[in-house]
Length: 188
Image 1 (cartoon, rainbow, N blue to C red):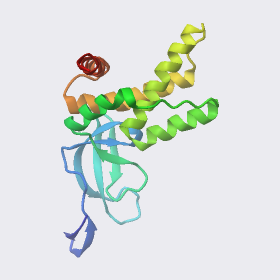
Image 2: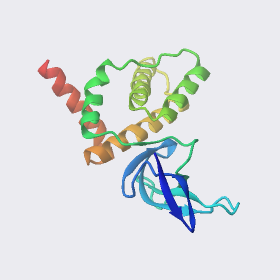
Image 3: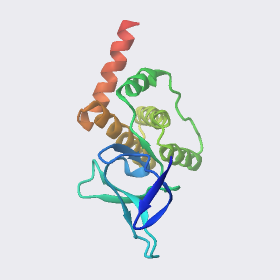
């Protein structure tokens, strides 16, 4: 979105903020953040001011992020709506897992999926890792550190967003999802 701007005696075009102060966004690997302020700053020390989002991470106390409004590197998106969350939960049983036999390729696939901030991709990771965990434990093997790392990251990202949207505690999101799926299965 482009708008006319007037800032410190300069008239011209400027990028308008896509998000508003007070709104919640999913910000790359930082998870759910609240936009506290949108302000012009000279953080790079080059003498030119840029517009920045000043963000607070919802689940990390005291953490502040400064992301340029015209940022091209860090993926930021609005949180899902309640309707979109319900549609996602209904779709979970049909979402396919990520079965990749090669360890290094699998880790790269997990990393790439998390960076998309796409909830369906994150669900794929969680489903895959739950099944891998179950199979490894049934075969008397330990769960790998890589699997545990990506399971934790995927759950943090997905459950953090759903908790804010549904206004429930993050620790209760998994139970909420299971209940919704069981209820839907019972009705079918």
